[in-house]
Image (cartoon, rainbow, N blue to C red):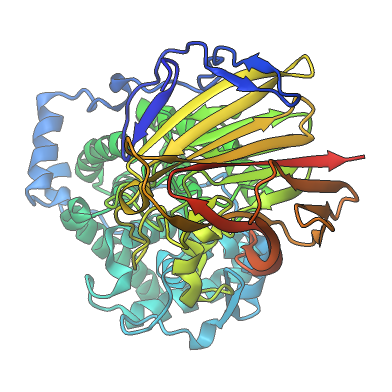
Length: 617
């Protein structure tokens, strides 16, 4: 590996290596071209992380003592005002979050049914009990009360408060005992409590004092449960959700200062553990990245409601979280499908970015989060150049190493299937593991095996541990073109081979040259042959036709453009085929599509497979 390359280890937070000239490679006409020094990209104008951002708040002895006493169980009301009775339950302020819900989902709920990832569930017949067998994304929406924001977006408070209260009390009737069932994970309880506080007017509009009292009892009961259990969360994003809710309760409920002091210390600690140095969450999931951003937007709104300045770390982390999302944004404004996420729509992403008030350009590379981005002309190339997340960080971990997506203008061309994290709605839950497999991504697969083991419940096992990454520029037709090279060891222990992928995006963005290389992992290659398949999953509505020689395919895109995939070299025994595929859209719906697959047998001593994807005319 050259001096300018970087090796990423699974879960590695190593700093970027210094840039240096890369090796020679062959140009399109066979001429040797020097790969130029890698251009430093950084994250502009987003901030770099500094330890001071997440230092505990400076406090006097009194505040430190109050926080310690609250942590060991002294009631907050006693600590806030030991000489008077506890204050009556009420909200100190009304929160106005800049983050809007989905009006279509809210309208559906007003009409009597939940609309969750394309699945309709009658609200009046919905089972909220612990014994209900809901798929994880359905349980998440129901028990996390994210639907409250949608309902408030679809109508005025007077028009939808009755519906909100009816569902709230139905849920409360099925979850009388805290701590039991899928509703009582730290993450779910934190999301729910924050949703109740931010959307409190929808739940507290009743003129019946008894019903309002039951709402406050549920809020306080959930807050106390989180006070005791927040540190038990096995997931760092889940812990962040819990701490955000605790801080919000401390801000908005009477006698909340002890809880706020306790919550802010935990919140700052959780912020420092949820993301890597370039701002990407440790699960590498764009959906988790959006969830973390939304939590901070809502918490910032809680501070604004009580006219209190939030910790500086909150704004600093928002500045870090938003740019990575922009790296995975295609020309149509939506997100690519990575680590279990569906293709989040342009509207949803734009609304989140606008609510964050963060203005930043997308970084070209996120070496800690693991994604590379290249743009030229109207083309956007996204490349997964890192190991999967560590098992303790994975939410719906995917074996997607060295997969890529490509779009041109508003038209997606090469995609990944995506959608594992939202399987259970319109996308069947039974295919969730299949959507996380290497074969569901646009990459090379050996012997139909995953580059990293895909396990149940979103977990992943052994496989890719190291990825070597190198990025630079080469001259194509006298103009600079982006060249990205990466290699992983996911097949080394089983098959004795390393997969290396080289991608070169032309200066005009109308040509993507690729080469998949299999190299012996040891000094000597193994004997024999092994099946391989290089998959190019295509976006919906692309019409595909194979060439007469069987070494190319034409792609007629919905926007009227025509592209061609051609196999390089003259290797016999290679077959290009068209197979069925699917793509999960931004609404969670599976869309039938096709994939191009280069198949054949390859020697265990190694081989090279060049290909070209080019716009014609």
